[in-house]
Length: 119
Image (cartoon, rainbow, N blue to C red; front, side, top):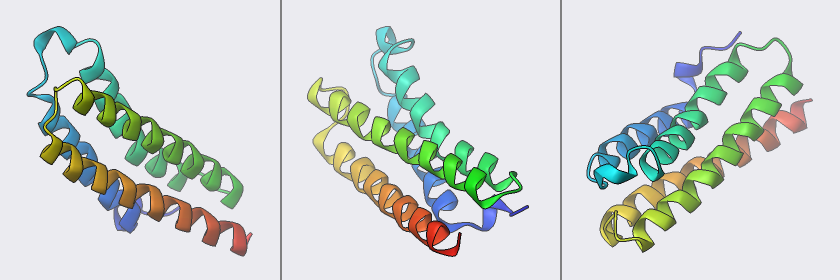
């Protein structure tokens, strides 16, 4: 069993989730059960799936959870774009969050490739 807190991509994903939570406090209240909820759900899914995968006993199980985390990161990527295009998130804030999301996606992809190479 791995300690997920020691994994760099988890640390970056956790920071991204915190940043998304902060950014979504400024979304309209009528989006509380819409886009705000979806942004927060996808943002927390990334580090959550990394953590869950760390608790699994086999490399293939861990890889599967990393893949789910990567899917959630892509979902977040789109939701951030939608929030920007709707004017809920400024272009500047979107650029910062998007850069974090892209970094997490690259790190997850690299991590999955290394895991497969070991496998």
